[in-house]
Image 1 (cartoon, helix red, strand yellow):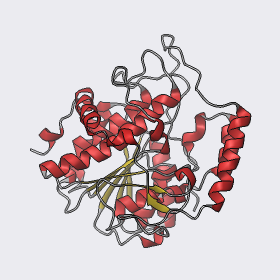
Image 2: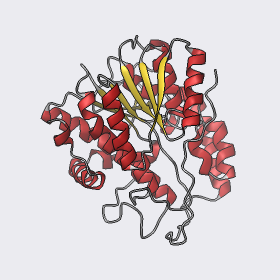
Image 3: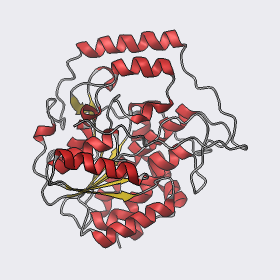
Image 4: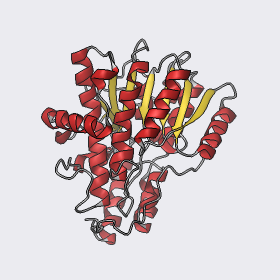
Length: 359
């Protein structure tokens, strides 16, 4: 069954006092078209990378997911795209799945679609707005009251490049709040439930856009000069840095968390809603199906050999698509001092402390 075509993106806010939107620094349309066509041709000829230590089998597929009976999985943004495909595959493998998203109607449609494929699926919807920290706290309280533990938390939900700067309920730039800070806070709030599982995992979705990202410590909310692409890249770099730092802190403090990052390459999801016409049309030729893009996340969530502190994604040209493997970690994400600084800043902004959550 085809995944429901549901949007997860927040509509851009139209505020009179919104800062000036800087023109995105992108090539001319003809140059973009030529680049995408060349990448498509190169990707079609790519056979992937040679194996590396810790790399998954390049032909790993949904059929290789081991039985998930008894495992409890939470997937944010599970009403469409990568999140829906992740929830559907894990539910089919026997996991109890909680789909967390903002829209209850779309949540009901996603649950119905999954049960249409797997009639005995144990799946439900829970309302969650990651851009609202009060919603994150309320969601965590409801799960604490209804679940014995959480085996896997998949931090998947996101928005991409709204043309105008929007602010979250807490006053943060919308992409930073939704893609990164809400997931940071959610992980802290759910840490007690995760630690009740025998081998808990947290999977954070990043993006190839993280390679161009930079954490703007002096203006992380892009108040002075908003650029949609720069803000998106920052949020995805932050998500990757969080995944790697969480593993380091778990190892140091004995939290028992296996923290893993993944990215889907370029896949057909609703994140492309804000792209221009040329990028959408050419991207449709280049993009892989969402089900294919979900494989790195599914491997991270379910494969016994998935390793904490690793980053999984496609291994074709520029990691746009192709066989599953180890993704390239950008240098910025390996900066442990910057990661620790980001962690401390995020705890302050989100009003959470991981150390308190494990007491």
